[in-house]
Length: 218
Ligand code: G5P
Ligand code: MG
Image (cartoon, rainbow, N blue to C red; front, side, top):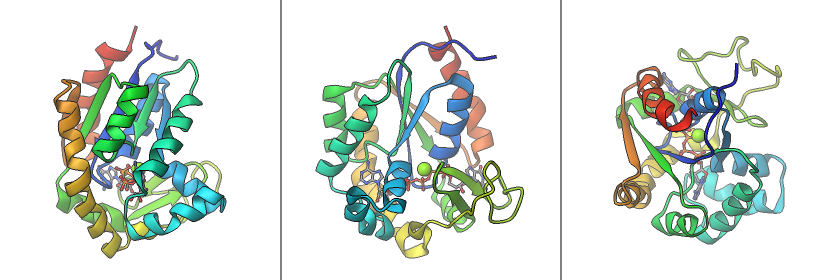
């Protein structure tokens, strides 16, 4: 049974590896919204070796942010492709300049912020495996793939992300603190921010549904 939902613009924030992708896929399944993940889309361009992929590859590999002008143009185009469906944006905006640009064209309705301790995050990235074409993500011991190194749905190879190397993870956490933390305040000041704390996605998920059910279900 699909749940009838209102058309809304949702956003999920959180540090690298805080579980944005994991919680997003559960939201997509339960509420039938479109997941628009900037990181997944960029990795897909890199994999397909498009012009954009070639331009952004070094930023992703080193854990640095892709310049605002490139990201804003790319993500606003991607959002405009979603028709007549609620969307859930993940990974964008990551700077106040991006948040401002988005607000001017697509003001979001609801912002979820995942708050997970940094020591938990560092542990997770070591065990993360991804299926690049779909963005499906696994973690050994949490959601272990049925066959080691293979995607559950397609049976294709899983890979580790180059930016999950310890040095790149450190860089991503540093950038998160300096550039992305102000984005949380940006939405707090607009009174549309809701924070969810926990050490695991299973602990966070019931809190998310308790909050979203009354907002999203008709
Ligand atoms: P991304 O792709 O947006 P990040 O760094 O923000 O990358 P990431 O790493 O994708 O975020 P996540 O989505 O928050 O993490 O987390 P996840 O993948 O769901 O979970 C992390 C791991 O933990 C997984 O293996 C998952 O299975 C596991 N896990 C989840 N919950 C649990 C649990 O409860 N227990 C356990 N044990 N495991 C669990 O951005 C990547 C790069 O793209 C560029 C930048 O270069 C960026 O570094 N980029 C941008 N640049 C500029 N502006 C933007 N807007 C950009 N967007 C992307
Ligand atoms: Mg992600």
